[in-house]
Each structure stands twice: as C-alpha cells, then as structure tokens.
Length: 424
Image (cartoon, rainbow, N blue to C red; front, top):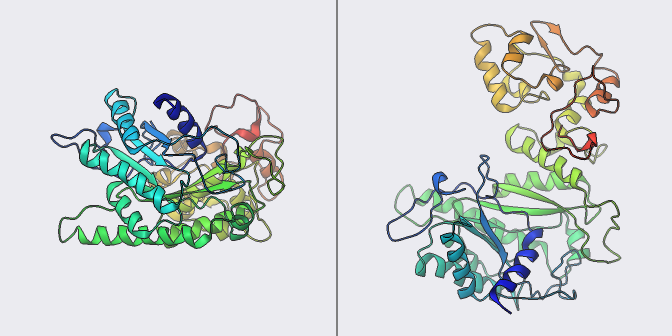
C-alpha cells in the first residue's frame, strides 16, 4: 500500500478520538532544530486559551487485536487495514511540517500484537522525531492501556501531552462492550503519569531535568454507547480532576459504526446536544467552583437539554436568587447565568468605586438576556417576571419564543432553526 493510501486509511480511523488539544507546553525553538511549542510558533486544533493550531492526527496502525463493540477498528470488522512504519510516519510528519501543513503531531494507535509492542513502536517514532530529525514541535501521544509503565515513562519524557482514554464511564459498561480491557489497566497509568508530572515539577526547582508531559494528561469518555447517566459521567469527571489532576476530560458523542445487540439503536444521529451540555458542565467544574453533586443528584440524573447546566442549576436553586449585584460575593456572582468568571471579577472591581446600576451592566456587556432574571441592581429587579413560577423556565428554554422575550446567546451557528441547539 502506498504511503498516501496509508495516510487516508489511518487518518480516517483516528477521527473518532477527540482528546487532542494542544496547550500548556512552552518549549522554544533551538538552533539546529525545527519546530517549537511557544504561542508565536503554533497556529489549528483548539487550545485552552482559544488558540487554534494544526496537528497531524493519525493512527500508527488500525490493526487491532481487541474486539471492542463500539470501535470501528475492532478485529472482527471488515475494513481496510494499514500500519505505518516508524520511518514512514516520521518522514510524513517532517514533510508536512516543512510545507506548513501542521505544527505538531497527535499519535494514537490500535493495539497491534500487544500493548507493549504497540507502545514500543510509538516510542520509536517519538525518538526518531526528537533525536534524529531534531523535531522540537508539539507531540501528543495516546498511551495504550495495559502497556508496561516503563514504556509509559519513556513516552512521557518525549511527548508534550499524553492521553489515557477511559472510553466508557462505568466498569459495567467496559465489561459489556470492551471485555478484553479492564479498568485497572487504564487507571494505573493515569495515576503513574500524575506522579511523574508532580515529581518532574518538583525536581526542576532544584536541578535541570527533562520535563514529563509538560502539557499534562487528558482522557476521553464516549457518551451514549451505554445507559450511564449524566450523573455517572459527571461524578467520574469530578473524580478524575480531583485524583489525577487531568487537564481536560473530553466527551465524544457515540457514533453507531457497528451493529451489536449490546449497542444502542440510534436513529436520530449521535447525541451531540447531550455532549455539548456535558462540555458546558465540565467548564463549570473547572472554572466556576461547582461540584458534580451540585449539578446533578439521584433525583435529577441527567441534564435538561433545553437549558444549559448553569441555568438548570439556578432554576432548581431559585431560593438563592435574585442576588444583589453590588453585594453578592464573587463566588455567587459566578453562579449567576449570563455572568462569566471574568465578568464577575470585573463587576467586583467596578463596584468598589461606585454602586452599579442596570445601565452600568449594559455598558459592561453583561449577558443580561439571562442574568436579568437572577439579579437586582441597587435593590431593583429588572427581570419582569415572577421567578418563582414556571414562566422563568419557559423563557430560558425558549419554549415560546417571542420578540418581547430575550433569547439566549448562540455559541455556534444555528443553521437548523432548532432553538434547542443554541447554547445556554
């Protein structure tokens, strides 16, 4: 098979892995080497700070020994198979970089022969890129569950970011859909990577040492392949952030690529809106001080797809509102729908000079289409409706859109006309 054909096959096989984001690494360019990871030298996958960089996202191989029921590369699928040699993949990466097609590499792989054998091949790619080609650009590698931790260590010293994908949110789901994998083979390297990052950061204070995955580690969860609730997913996410200090948890709406009695029969397409709500909730966990058990509980196990998670929480905790914009603490301002954490800090700074009016908030560009229902300004309420009845939910969920009722801001282009696809 020609190199271009391999690229087409293995790039297509990699598209279901969404856990490739680049940020957090700042290795500058050096004389005699090519590439760098500083902000000025990176520009097309989304970063934490909103930048966009280009990565070559590809599998080393899609020849897999496992038979995970949700995976397009499962051993029982009749698909085109291909495997790069380390030399081919290195040459491809460098040539793409020199032509300014990419700024880095996201390397994953199906399990070829064994986890250890696959990791060894991937490490050969990284070593050749770093040491033979002098490639100093961004590299994100996906660790293979079950691989020896010594191999994980070697990969971590060569890569900028590492992902250990959990895939399924529960042990039961893993046993049902991926019986050849086990939970411990995923969690063990995740804990090991966390320890190595902490040790690396501590030792660099006293002496020069190679950084271990300086951009941190991530993971991916598939949404909708099992019956796991949003509560289960959020509790797992909270645990991962608390225990393993992950940079990001990525959510991938289940795409039905296989037919199996244990897989859900999806006729309306992937649950993209549910995925979007989980990302919004994830943002609340990471930046707004929310905990998973505040957003969901046993009596409310899934997010309402008609309103964003922050509005959903506010409606269910309406006894805490409205809050006075000139007196509420920063932590409470951040929980007001329509007020982000940067705007909350801006409000706190501004009100130290003089009390803020509703017109002041307009000039500050607070999203008053939502915030107005949850705040007062100088003791006056500007929502125009009784927040203790169902009118508030109807307004926020846009069940009855009207010219007199403010709509919600759209985060993404809404070409379908479906109001449920708008961001909350």
